[in-house]
Length: 143
Image (cartoon, rainbow, N blue to C red; front, side, top):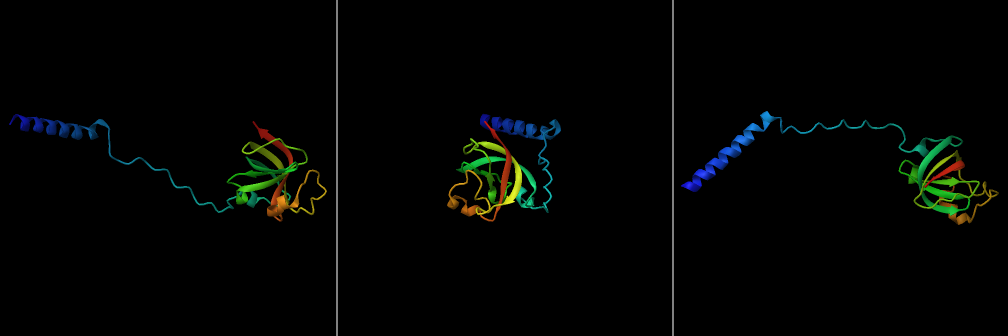
């Protein structure tokens, strides 16, 4: 019988503790949830919104270096997640360094840019033909 009395006391104590929790400030209400974001009606990409000839500043990670006059940056806010950057000087940046690039949006055409110094093998640019690119005036490499 002594064992049953002990079980009753433990059960009674547990019941009292549970009954006291709500009055002690503990509640079982779920935490408030943040309001869902409204759906955007604008294009999802910075580059998609930019027109040829627009000035654009992009901060993104270097994905790969094409040659002395060009490199590709990657960011989720860019069309196809990447952007070809054309420079007039050698930029010492390597993947995955962060860069800020300021320049003008152009439609890439290897033939139109053939006289540009540092432009290498046309095969390296084939996937960018006809797409938007950024002709950089200034490149900042974050180290």
